[in-house]
Length: 256
Image (cartoon, rainbow, N blue to C red; front, side):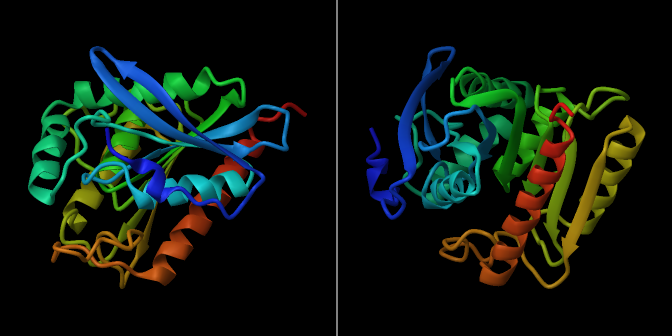
């Protein structure tokens, strides 16, 4: 089993941090749940879906920030805790299993949704999903499938899908944050995605960071990957925009 404890921050003693085991079929998975232990009422929940390299520092750090900002956040495990890739080649092989089988991707992602919704710390009627690259594509598949989420944010996510959204199928609001110089997901895919969402009648907004490249929110993006470049300023901006989107959408779920 991967020793994920080395990624956990201990700087904020208000936060409770739990490793949450769950399953999809025969696969054992492990989420990293973080929330403010001083808050007793059920919190809005956010699922954080990792890039193709698997769970790691980036999504754990995002979960911690979201917990500090008032959410119960769970970093998701899409691969299984005994299958975390050791290098980019292995990660690419694992990622392609899900990219080639979107039904499997949706089912595996839904296992995490169901797990977080069952937590006594979470208001199951106020749940969101946030994903990066492979994880961004994953949260969009959840939206296309009509998952019980009120909003999803895709950050430089894969936008194409063989299982396109249909009129009325998308229940969640969608925010896609993309890079203007993305060499992994080019402009023509953005255009096709916008057309798909328009035809489906989805509440969807796409924002482009013109000077950014794929991987702008991942501090490890540039290591061994020429198509990705980290940008601290764009990473900060994308988090702030995702947070504002969650808070604005959450207001619409609260009873008057």
